Image (cartoon, rainbow, N blue to C red; front, side):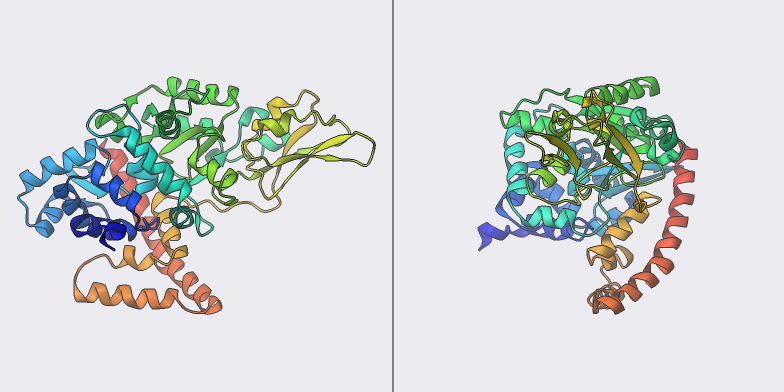
Length: 430
């Protein structure tokens, strides 16, 4: 069975990555991916890295490697997107990158010769969209990695008056502080698979600290605020879906996505995972009196949320919105030439975490992995606390909900407050 599960250092790396909120089920495709991207030494280092950002000295002590030697290894891993590093004042932190959004994407965000990108593309397609375990791992739970930002220019005045700043793609971009552009991982992958996309390749943006990291490690290039806003506008004009980091405060990316290439949209279209992306707080409605049943909106919709149905009159068709599928992106409005479509506020607002750390914690909670984040460590006490928390997460549904509420209030609120303080310090230092 060794050929099915991997062995040695790569098996340990898979086990470490699987502790993340979005885990990585073992498979032959995964182990080949890891062997392409990580040397054995890098896999050993990664398998021993803490769950949370750590200083070089902490990791050095854990690995029993001299800091100078370890730093050169970690810097090389950062250049490959396997590790993310950042400064807080005069302190340098490193954290192991997860698979998605993480080193899977980073490996194809620029053309490079140090590993076989075509083979990686083939393996990503197999692991992420042809095998069933990984998609289920990624998209289980209610809290997802990405959320949809509506096209602001198609919102009516009454709806636009209600939109909040974190729901506006332009506001998210304007407030970022740093901006970078790179190749769209999804379209680059499809290109290697012989499926050329008609949409631009260099269109996906990183924001804030994410943009600073990507530019510094040459995974993309820095752009100006005005350049970022221009790219955003181009995405709208091309009818692409704006998908951002699923947080309110300081999202780290906005992608302009198409239904033919985007992994999240393809999870809906190909695998039938309806909740793969968090919708916007808006939903499309159709004026049946104005609709002529031309089908242009249905053809434009990236997730086939609009269908044509007969009205009972001979040959007459009308467009209808499948509310459970509608992303609230606004892409379809541009296709309608009869002014028959408009966006309305959803009856119930969607939940969006405040910060990245809150999203990570809630995703871990929903996926039964909260103990891995809270009780990170190798000592007996850490292992015992992990086991205790795991037992709580296996309680019957009603009791588990009570435990979740307590964990949310006691741990997440405290961590969010700490994350906000931490982030302010980081922003002050750059």
